[in-house]
Length: 290
Image (cartoon, rainbow, N blue to C red; front, top):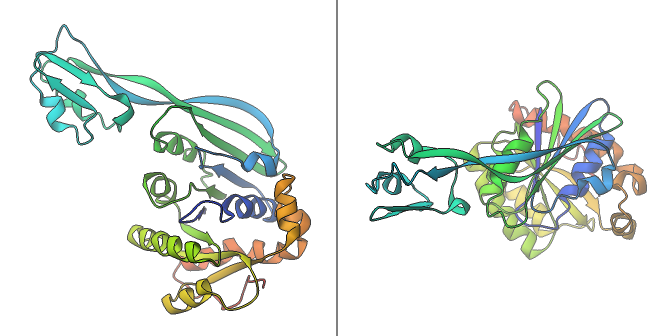
């Protein structure tokens, strides 16, 4: 099973929950840090690094000797990554989505696709956790190519936890869309509720079953719990607002070390999400700590 830990905004606790879940679940687990613009799961997992790998995407390269300036490549490109001005064709690799249409349509065969380095993958291990983290190169405009390379390491028959990038744009969709279920992490604030609604709308559009986790919960009824109740969204986990959590985060310690009482709730998350993926009902209150 592949589980996405996602949210509509940054700073809600996705990485905190992703790492705590990977450490709590018994047996082999794969943790993919797909927040490639700012990966930080390694601080909490502290894996032994086995190797580093470069990631690449394909971008067009124009042979000026063959190019006649017909403009077919510019016409077919949906992202304005290639333009034709008279007999001169220019490529803007930062806008290229590596679809390959320009190379296929060129009647003169003047366009070939060449590799462009986009980032790095760190592959490691910590106990029963297989750890892969993607990191986008400085100056690169698009993170989805690196996210896709990171996702290739998902386990075929075991549990994979995907620490997703924040927001609801292309990086979020790239990381989430291949998952079996998702846990949307939020916080009981107006901003948290606003961005949770955006994340819910997007993930419903993708047709992925999901539940919600509330970080910094105070044990009282809040706008998040009221929204989930009104929308029929299962609230699978609430992490109390506790100074120990902030202190542990600042020291690079996992949530499990300072709040062992959360272990049962964390271990139940994959089972609950499996039920949602299979269309089975989730027991109200199961896996919730207030």
